[in-house]
Image (cartoon, one colour):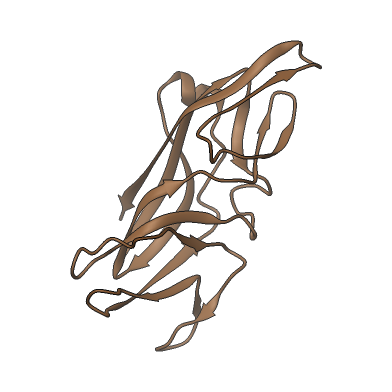
Length: 163
């Protein structure tokens, strides 16, 4: 069992608090990434989608998880369980210091998450912007209320093992 913390960073101009629309623990926010098999090293061809609101029963034992999937190469089964309450928004201070902000913790058994994909459903503050689509790797607008340009660029993510 290894836990992986998804951390994000970006360059924020006149904005702060980048996070999923409903906060870091938004039950409907889709986390998209590829999975690498812990046994054979095979990388999934397509991104896998997990969200806190989608759970399935564990095949052995009691409890639930967010994803049960078999490796298409070696047929080993693995699970991904999301652990809420460990993330926070990416702030302007993080960006200025070149730091990453923790977003979500994943308990991965048999798999390693790889290559998080920024997609739709993000929000920011400065002047509040909601429903932002980051699938194009950036966002730029003009804040009429604040009379200044706003921008997100240089999106980065990493999955760090956590003990």
